[in-house]
Length: 358
Image (tube, rainbow, N blue to C red):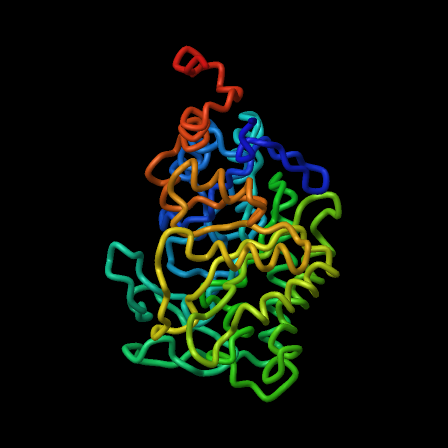
């Protein structure tokens, strides 16, 4: 029986050669938001390595939206040129380039993880963070974030819109909106972060309003024939927080908005979350959303071997598998998994002499 992990999937105008997605993973290697040859080699290697879709790391729509000063950005037309170079290489390798547009909100202005991630001071090139409400993410933070006013909210919406325009000009073929992991759009969704009393806080309808406004704005610039993904945290894993029932309800609305794939992650809103970490622990979120809404879903999180991924796709629990750390460990993940599943796929001609015979 043919491998389901290596079956094609058409989403709007693009046809993915397999269900393997390189998940967005921050590299903390940019300067002033600009990509460089690290990003070219990092992303290009995974295209050579057989993934069907490679999604660039969380790319900030504004300088203040970066997680760290070393994050990629897309707030300037000058950022486009290098992205275009990288994307043309990925396309040449029969893979598709995607981008995740992001704003870190109150989790911005931090040092890279290898510097024991902490809030940066102004003297350390840090900046004032913003959020739906002036609530610190950590008790160790000296100052709370600044509560966004209506003007600030409109700027966020416009920044995502302009980011989508630049993403299209840079030849990205998939656009993902980051509304997970405790970053700004997730902060608005979660009642643990959002204590507003205006039209952007309180009820489910109000807490989802900013994300929906961002999607409407993005769709003004992003071509109708190219896929639009949204990454969500399916649950906060914290009492009183965002939950799977709300994720299903949100997905029904996103489906009406024309969103093609829900990338199903979880957590990140609060420090005191309790995550039941085990292999494939987020797959049930993807499975429930897919079955109850009919929307394509991506499963992510501790999916580490070929057979595990194959079983998820074959059993209809998700349509795509997003690989993060496993892709860092093995840039040739597509080639490796094809060998393990004995799937006869096309290899880069430069590597064909190493292709196993079945």
